[in-house]
Amino acid sequence: MGVFQPEVSHDSQSSSRFNALRLRLEHFNLRVWALAGVIGVAVALLIMLYVHSQSSKQITLVIDGQVRSLETREDLLGEALAAELISLKPYDQLSAGLGDEISDGDQIIIKRAKEFTLTESGTTHTLYTTEDTVGQAIKNSGITLGTHDKIFPSLDSAITADTEVKVLRINKQVVQRTQNLPYRVIKTADPSLYVGDVRVAQAGKQGVMIQHIEKTYQDGNLVSMRMIGKEVQTVTKDKIIAVGTKAKPQPAVAKVSSSPSTAIKQTSAKISASSSNVVRKAGVDFEYKKIIKNVSMTAYSSEEPGIGTRTASGTRVTEGRTIAVDPDVIPIGWWVYIEGLGFRRAEDTGGAIKGNKIDVYYDSLSHALNFGRKTRTVYVIGPVKPELD
Image (tube, rainbow, N blue to C red):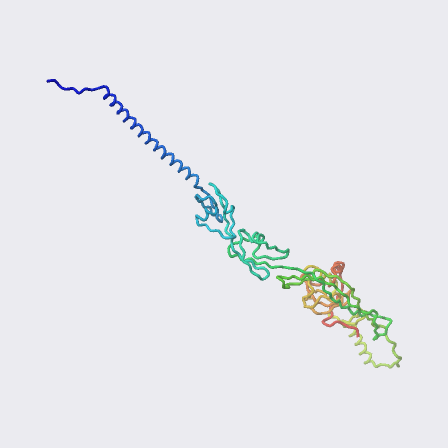
């Protein structure tokens, strides 16, 4: 009995080949889609990385000299500072506006304002500044300083928090002051008048001096006064009194012989009178304590810088009276008679007045300079000025 073989037709073979081809195509399509998916994911990741890299920015903040790096995705400066909790006060200074856009690599400088107090004319204000010195802070605060104003601390001092600045307003004013100049009474010998008779040869007249006084006010209060100049408006006219020196005629008297003892007494009196320290100068007889010869004479004036109007003895310098002496040679307060000058009083001293030297006072500096240097004989009298009888 033979084996039965199934009959294979031509159609069945074609169908098998078609199915196999279809399976291969489906497998190929799956691989293509899988590859496309991988590529799509990669592209998406690249896009995300690019977007991320584009939105993140690296900027530098310099706050009061301190450098700090900041990474932000914000577009505006104000938003970036707010995100980092960096607050600003009204007087702080920024190198850019809060509404400005920022870019990668930007540098932003922030200066914190410092609070300080300013006292001016007795009123205290609280101010803020980002400047480094007192002078810059004052200038930017709109405060103008006058020529003579004073400020503490100095303008170049560093300003810090809680610095106290004080401004003293200094004003100067020049006024005129009138001063009367008393005239002197000068007695001169008049040989045409008898002894004991006097007459007024010239009437005295007071002079007038205009002084220029500089007044200094500090915050409206007068703090000092000084004389910066003076000028004579009316010249003083001295009063001159003529004193008679002519001997009066003596009535005739009978001569009486004197005894030898009386003659001896008269001779002794004459010798005693001739030996006493009595001299007649400017029509006045006076007794002196000592004579100093070859005294070096110079002159000075209150118009010289550093020379005041008060003497070492406390009196006011007066032309025609005041001289400066060495107290070891001529006591302070004593009167002297200087050949060619007349009576003077020792009222002042000087660092250069030592030994036989005298400095004569003059109101006018030009007169003092014209005096030059002289040599005179000086009679030292005492504390009382000689006067005509």
